[in-house]
Length: 576
Image 1: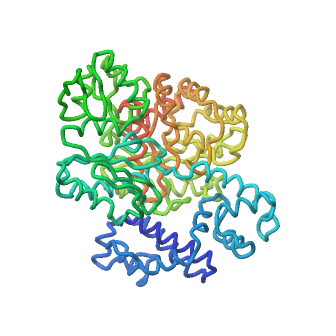
Image 2: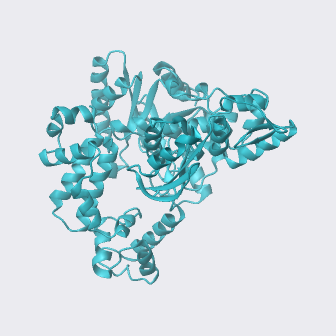
Image 3: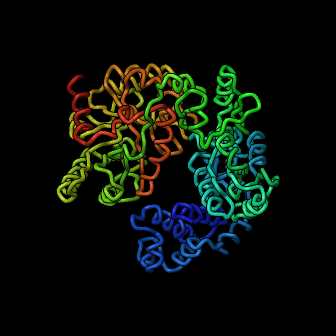
């Protein structure tokens, strides 16, 4: 397990303990340890091996032993005992907005409710509103949350699917007899929400039974749905289904392409093949009865008279026509990103210090970091007052004098207030290198009102970047209704950059609007919105969304050196 997975287990243990009414100090010990793990800047394996993990604030002797057990891959008996002591439905309730541990305990103790179905029935019968600490509004919020839970049941964030799929892939590719193995499906296409995991492998017929035996008995497998020598389906411990398809080495390129999809892309490609007198399927590329040999997917596309189409673009969004005419963009890659924009520190609601974030960013090979803590309206997130802004900027100046060859940019995530004004005066905004303007409150406006709110905000010449455009939280909360095209048009006219928030819970701007932004000449920025050092890793998901949106290096602000980013902000201010 990695530190993220261990932190998740510790948080789940804290949740169970609090539902059970355990000592609050015991609950906080697990929460603090999880938070400490997430904020580590050193490698967890090294800290455990040296014993230094015990010296990390928030992690004592007992907690260090639990972390060591989980890190080694062993089951933690206390965790299993806690999970078995609680109805599984109570943990599912924790996914519902407004249902914290105390409220879960209340409906369990007072009404005997231990499933989300029973909770919904009680809410519809108006049995929840009368409980202490609830009320009619709480009940309505719970019912709305239940609708969201039902709507997205069986769906997973790309980040969770990626972690599960990579673990399966690592195990399979090392197993004797496996020639090639790749992750396929919507995950390979970098969809933001994934229903299941698809894996494609090639192997000789004689070795397939052993591979399937291995796959269906991996530690991550909770149950086996179907098992055969060419295809098996399992349910993983987190509830996701995973399919493994094994074919011959000769068939592998066609099977990988077919399983990657999308369905719409595959249909369009088959229609194109028919025009050429060919037939393409998961088994091969045929001219009559003759199978045209292809060693990889690039060969498949080449024989169909087109350039290789990256998996992210395979959505029948014009990629086949563009590939035939050699108009596909050279998609942005991880090494193109030169700096990180939009991170939070412990000055507001982040876990790590400003210095820890900066040093971790430099260690990852980036040239600059834009610190973007919250503004004063976000009091719930420790938003900065004008005086604290000045103090933080002094700390940035001090660190910039120390960090040779690396630069910290002064930025802020400034709240867009309900009437479209910004949370700071222009005088304060002028002290920042960059200003990210975001909506965090009053998310229930009508489309016209919400759109005008944002249009008014970005007319302010100090706004450099528009943050997480719709405020959506995937699988939790729909974004507020917005006229995307009107906002993109205005951003193009004003010279405002639009963020692709790389946090896998957001991925906002949605990739489906990226092509329109490109057509209008809008600059985009891939930002992790990191609240801890480990959050830098979310850039992977933002890059996936950017590639899916047809973005090239030149379309992304933070592929530029710091001076060009600063020049972009200055030009915006000068022209308005």
